[in-house]
Image (cartoon, rainbow, N blue to C red; front, side, top):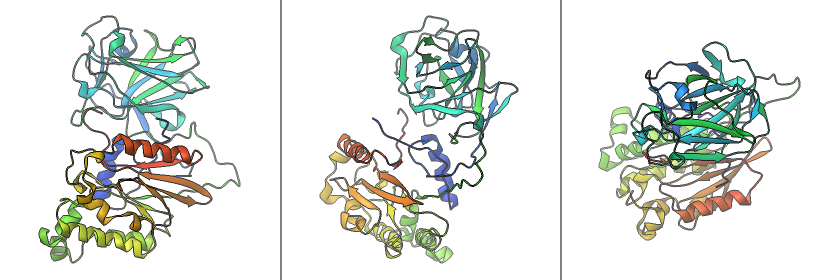
Length: 419
């Protein structure tokens, strides 16, 4: 699908939001904080020497099935300087390793640079993003040892690029398994119009980025005199489920009894009071509004907290998490809408109060907004938990109807153990 996504740093306003930001950093392009700024978000890339003797980085480009394994898991990869010189890459191809598919890359990023590769630490600002996206390696495993590569164990993606680089950085920000701390890949190859770019014997380093690389402005540059830059934030409100549960009578009103206030209410009050002066044009709730979908008191408290934003005429989008539906295992088209609490508590009529609101999917679980900051419009698309194919098609139609707008996509727990 031709979804445009803009992975940019997540700004947080509480410890709970910070925890969610760390968790969602692995999602990279799925939940984003918008920015117009050219300010730096530099990330240090380091040669980490964290691999077994028989599974070194050189194994990733040797033309055989033997794997490269990095003990640090996500945000690891390779930095290759091909002997053939500057080349235009327009595809990436990966081969599965010989065991544990949970260690397979789930996401890739390809960066290029023309700077000389010296030392053991590098600045992400010296690299330009060439391509990024999801990885879908087959679950079939490669044969252990130095055997010829098997095409049935491979995955490939083509991309547009017209610029040649002398070195390429390939990073895997996330792996398929939810609990593994390792990343492994059988083989990594970039392709060009004239054939493979990497070859056995090329200079290759195993590297680790200190965090997900999110600064895609290319090589370091200075803002020309007189040219202004600007930035804005989006307030993400993630997983308020326990705020709702333990502020409700059925949860014992624990927050109010112990602290004299309820964090969900205090949070939305803070947003309503300070967001505009901090240049935060809208809020985005990421789902799990409540903890137990069948407990009315939790919905009442959550609805009251979000009403603070309604009353302040402060726009927000909201979507359902797995705790907000009667059966978290169902796809959205399998739900009995008449008995689902989320569309009843946050119906079309309530969404229409938002100045940014533009539309809702027929089932009432997905919505989109258009907001503007300093003359630039952005489309914010909210997809609920377990959105079915019809919902995804609806979302694609929304994006296709607004081809000139950058898209900020929010959803709930999109990446799972095996995808």
